[in-house]
Image (cartoon, rainbow, N blue to C red; front, side, top):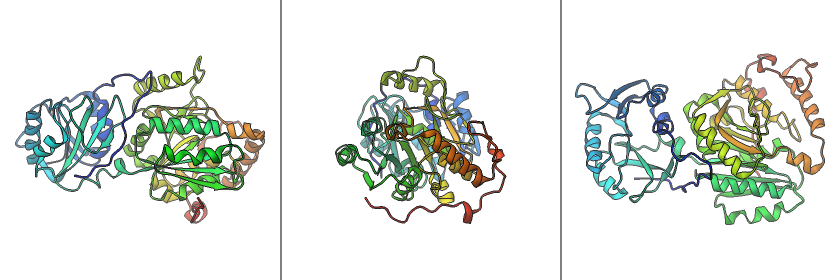
Length: 448
């Protein structure tokens, strides 16, 4: 048995205490892609909807597995085993009905610990991972467990399960660029540590800071094990600094995080599952109080107080669970970029300095390469917005206009289109993705 340890998560105040039972199906549905699935148990409408999207076919079953049902690539038994003897029976029946490389996803009943579970599965399923849920979400991979009040699920197989769970156990790379504003950066990192139980590697790029950022970053290893700090002697601009961070995290999904955000319970788990559900999305954005359309949401009476932020996040997580939409552009304040997209189009275009339109350009290249950027409408991140420009007394409107002109020139957009006018993606001439022209290699090395 091989497992990956993570920490449990404290969801914060205002988070709903319980989601509908079918919610758990979403987190495991990516494992069912192109598989013939047997669903044992509830047969709820919502659960069936999630299963049917990735699976090649689904056979619902309320009781024992029919003898003439044939063999399956996956069996879901998330509501069958409420007692240990029921779990043992489910495991025996499932092994008979699974293909050699099939998987069983089963809930673990109260009163069952890791040792007794391993004894029950025996030689039938020598490979398995445990997932736990502390309150509502996310589901974390855990290194075993004792009897507890946690919701626990096992993914079992007769063959090595690591390739199946690759997306679940792969470490996400976090890139945060800082130029001064150490107080905001500290708040962002505190929220990252508090609300991110998933395995992460963090790279902070200190972009020529002159305040207390150097001293602050020097202390971060006390709170984060896997953290790297890259120091630039001068402010290189956002895109070059992001490319430095991405280069330091090869082979990972990349999460770009502004240093003036406050994260919320379950934020990364929902963004990751949105990417797992459909890898053609390539990049995933969040909703916020401060972002360009369509990611900005209008909030009556919103003050940005921390309790209010977490409560709003919890409400959106429940009322908009699993919802989202395609968008022609995504803002870079909290942007998840799948590793497949990075391999396809590379890094950010460094002509867009010091900032603005580098994220628009990235989304345009992604779409020309066949990807469909996605907004996860059940993720809310508080964003103070443009703190670097405010702190440096730099005129953001001037930078906006300059980079808007660069964007139009690069993509052949009508030069008379004014800044601020809504421009659809189809205003860009459909040139397609030319790797020689559009791929931007990341720097070969960085200095830490």
